Length: 297
Image (cartoon, rainbow, N blue to C red; front, side, top):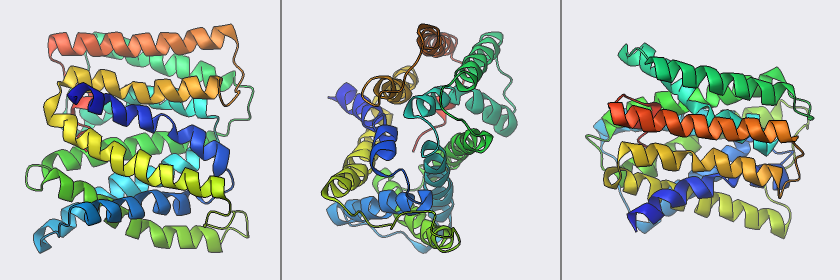
């Protein structure tokens, strides 16, 4: 059961980018992020009511801002302007950002293997973005890097906060506070965009179904399962299962979404997956810190 729950979250998250590019192409990223965060947090609050204490609120606000408001907003802003496969490609290069954050925050120097792995991942990702048949903007790539940085920075804070706050309360209120922080950001984006975005309310049955899946399946259930299983699995398992998210996004993009790739590009994606996996195995054998060891949210 613990393995099933650990796999469940990244597999569900892997469908996120296909859902966005299919049903919410012209939506405001921040409005979409509000929909994902706030109702999911309220649903968790309804299932198990918890109230934060006054001294816990600053930490919850900070985690909500980094891990939810900033991460969701930047991720959606990027994903709505990139093929879902390339979003997966970018996310599988998360260890590169993780090593940078670990080096800055904890003064940890990467090993030779980690540096080689990071170089391969960056080179492969760069090749795939450059050779993509879709028009790729630099801003979309920077937004994706910003989303990954916000995720890891927020996770560093969360790791310390989890020592004082129960995981259910932390998850519930970081979603609620993150959603509340996103509301004025969404309002500003919608009102000063000159009508560039669709109405922030689903207009068809298919959109409502996709929205419910985004709120319930990809947020309430996926985040709940992920956080619950963190103490039950090893860092190695956490690292390996985490790669299922971008891998599934890449598979869905290249199949169901009909994004066309050459045999060379597909081979490069396989190299990225294998390189990431082998590096994680090495890190676990040598007991080296990885970016996944700090992503505990």
